[in-house]
Length: 179
Image (cartoon, rainbow, N blue to C red; front, side, top):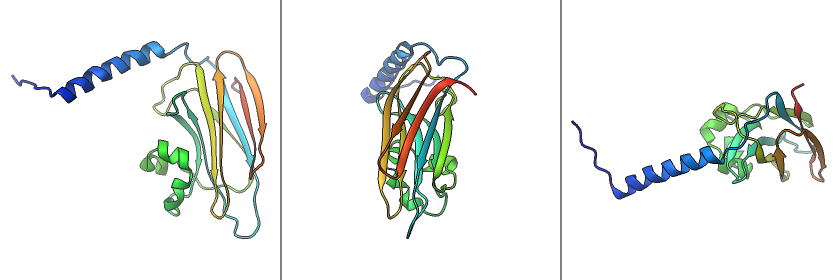
């Protein structure tokens, strides 16, 4: 029989982990409403001399600022990875190896819509509650912009439009039944 010896540090890690896990279970409220989704639409413009398509990250954070789900990531995989850190907030939250698997090509100016079905990065359904919706925008030889809005996601649908003044022109949040 193998005896296990615990150091003080490993003992406290185990105890703290258990306490935090219990707290997380208790902290969860009602589950995400069946058949609801949050559609995030955003528009950006650009062009002109030396214009490069921007890097864009669209993601959801919980109340504490932790990454819940990445909805979209417009990056250049392979080429240009050294500039990924220009998406400052997302880069600090994410894992560069994971960013490679989630990224898609950069896109020209236009309007784009992404949907969130209420699941986290692991595919588990999240609880109703307060979340931050983030659209982060960075362009070589151009601006850095961060849209971060606190929303309450529960049973009641809503629509909100936020006009912006930079190259990121508008963000629209539409929470309701799946289309």
